[in-house]
Image (tube, rainbow, N blue to C red; front, side, top):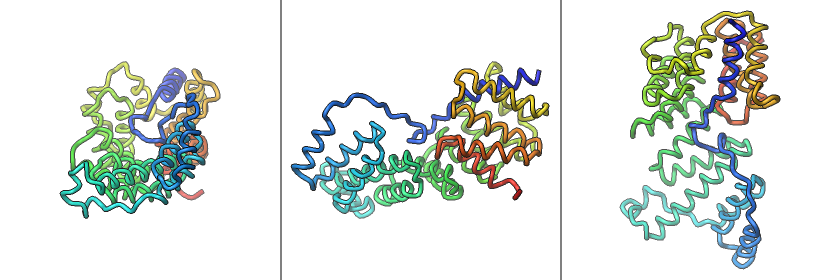
Length: 328
């Protein structure tokens, strides 16, 4: 029975997707044939080396080709050449006039900073990416998505309180399941199980078809030292792969057999997959933590931290768990 549960858990981990949270940490830009477009941009730059938007356009082309160093060089030059925009606060009512030169410049420079932030995240340079998002929000704080992007980046890079503050801003504007989930993650990473539970509950209520919301809800409730609230899981399909995961977190099995079973299940469809190794190691570390076996958990969280994609939710979770473990 334990082996069956272990394989089921591994299969769920392999299939689980957390790409509901938009951003470069989950995006996979396509690599297609783009002809001589880059040559055309280069020729345009040679003809007018002061045109900052041509650098921006060539940079976005390099970004799609995953040539991040070249993209960053172009974005840096675009920011250097761009005019100093008037902030939204200074523009006042003029900001509503889309034909205004100042309004247009504000929008372009805002775009430069948010796009460069994406590339910096793809290059695993969160500090610089956050600086760009800070500048974008200082220029124009109207957009909720830039707060959301900064909040999640702050959460996965260990800045839990400021991440929660970003989600507070946009959730004061309206309720959104991914924003509740993001704030729940930041609270969970911080160790605030009560707040995490409340946000995961709301996310699951708003989208009961998303299994991962229920898994995180179960973990937050168990971490908070309470039994699972049956009413919170009544909407979860009984055929969902989330059920074996939730059950496994509450059950005691032979550790060696269970660990082997989870790893086998996670790697079955994609042997050698770094992603499957990451998710299996994270889950097993959590499972051992629930069993109060922190010595074994440390090695698994360390493995997850090393194998999970940089700035992914999984890597952020592993880092948070390692911070919580007692010094060895």
